[in-house]
Image (cartoon, rainbow, N blue to C red):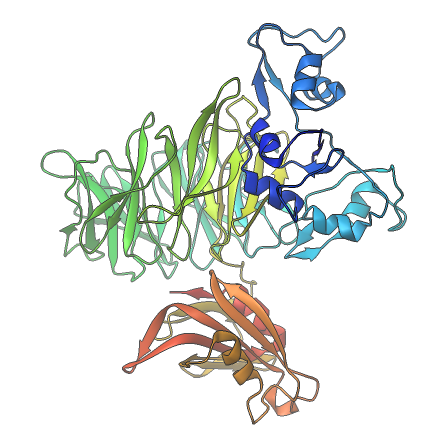
Length: 605
């Protein structure tokens, strides 16, 4: 449920936000304020994830803290389970919630209007039904003075969040669906506190190191667990682009394990760590000490040849190494835990750049966006009486353009990107204990943090899948020419390299070149003189992996022989060159019944 603060005379958005260390932009977005400079006494503001712990100082009382923070005494008493006479002690850590867990209905309010104002939306569609369900209302009718619980709605992004939690009594691997809001335990209680999930590129499997250091492979579709090897906790795992092999290091050597044959091959490299697959599938990135003992980045072909030293810097050790999805850059942190600076290395030249980072130089868990354009990370900060917390920051790989869409009350938190590079999931809910208990998602374009998982258990890691989970009867199509991959019904058969057909549908792909603005290009395709989509097709804007896109759906008078042909057009992250010609746009045709499922799993290579 959301928490509501009632504005007092003389207060501003920035003053209220600072009280709980919340980014001003997050508080504005959480309430869809039309004019952030104007709030009025008595106005109720939804206050998202912030820092709610306060250290008691001499002279403090429950009453004085309630007055200072502008919240009812009852809210502080309940949050801390205080008993009469509500005595508090110097240096005691108290939780000061940013308000009350309900909204008081005002004249003129409706469930539909409230769902829009407070982001009770799934995929940007308002969900007044969730408010009605949360309050067990017999109808949509509400009256002034009613106290309403305003829930958080499933945000609606594609894919699944895999996370590790002991909410069920023992550590397990769980899945969260951002569209339905459902959580499911899937790991057979084989996970441990140190487990980190690694999704396969086809989104069908998850690798993790569980109890006793056993490397498990979970088949998400079948629900089966396979034991592969035994490794040190926190060993970096990396899937091959075709999801057929896993790379990792064991006893300072690189192992390539082929799942189909249960065969592990060792490469002749000593001292290796943080091994990762290049998108091309024929090379690996890894860190290892040079002849002076300083960590450097290297690349090597998967057949063990062509080893090349990439960096020649003095930043060592190199921690949290992560190759960009494009394969053009790699990030790492150095030197350690107390001071942790994020660096980015250019693979072709070895040139190193440094990110700005947070004010304390404690920057952790850096993660590339799927489009390789931005890096998210957790930057530890400190506030008097509140202690350490972390800001979720984003920054360009070359430095600059820093944004803070959200904060966590934990010292540091893992961060993970949505498949479309538009949202970030992170952990919070530590409340001074050091153990997170919540997962939040924030859309970087409209930074209203949404709590999606909460409970009594600790949550130690979280990772978003690369795309939607394919159905059990789906296969994976991949074209290196058109630089795309996506799922399709496994019963369909190839008619050509670019077209597959089945009894219940089809798809075909191509690339487009045009000087028209993108919206005109979509309209030109939709209203082609031959009317392939009927006389009045419907055009819907969209995005895929952060790229501008559009859907074209047919009108009822489309010719039956076209089999409900629909289309999806997207801007390539980088134009493709085919037979010497450059194409900036990708187009997919498919029957309407299957188009969305295919696009949900679409990934630019």
